Length: 384
Image (cartoon, rainbow, N blue to C red; front, side):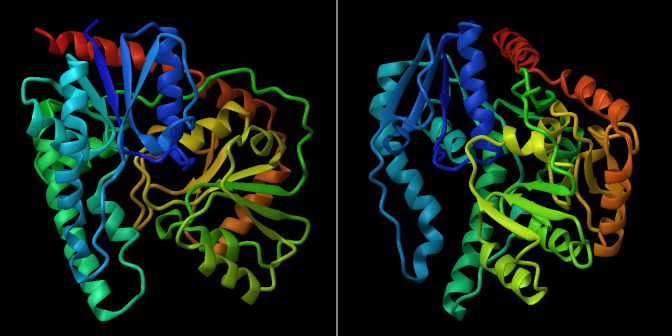
């Protein structure tokens, strides 16, 4: 196995799907004794935990940001600063292969060391992210700057996808989107199913009847406003939402307007979701843009069949059809609050022993060991 450098500019204070994936990657790669070095910003010190046989190296995080109209140039400015910070570290480490989930790292590596193969593992596409979670409200100049930045980011992401030696994705849906939106050669894109932390999740916590759990960033694409609206008239049920993000204030206002303060709770960021997965009666995930859905597998590991939007529905861009068989290990529902409420009641009334078994058996196929074995084979093949 070559000397591997896993580099990320992510902030491990966040607890989203990408950060959980990276944490699991580090844990399982260390168990397999991969020759792995982790390169992180100094602000991540102490946030990702130490693992045996893994070397941690930090680069200084001293990048400045423009705050005026020209803030749209920040992605380019960040690249210049990042190169200055990382060049001496890279010369010292001398990796033989680079893994990253960040487009800016791909561009950085290809600018500094074209001879090192870079494996890019995007979790989503900025082009799609910006379509659903677009510019926030603000002055005309601010919104214009954000639009210009969006165009620049998409151009940079396209360049990263084309420059990467291999693009590794978790679903056929994302592979098709990359090919369609960015015209990346099909033979460069490899689908390796997601790995999740498969462990004993039995626990002792009893299920709380009527507790509905949603997990995810509070963003427009997660469609949480439909989940909240579905709680109107749902006596005996309560919705618990774990996560944080730009839609928090809008959701709080919706909860107040619908007078659902006693029925909907926003928990904010949670480091460990196991207790909530165990306790929930129904797992609800109504995202209409998702390139895999790590939380779906996590819920299934706890025996909870997810209720998700029908992937064939209008405006729904998910990979749910690759993960869920309707009625076998989850349920599809229309993007309508009344339909969602009816589906929640239907699932809550079911005897779900066989469903829970189906969920656990399906999710246990997606082990991190299996994921890393496939990734290792891909990198070994790339050596030739």
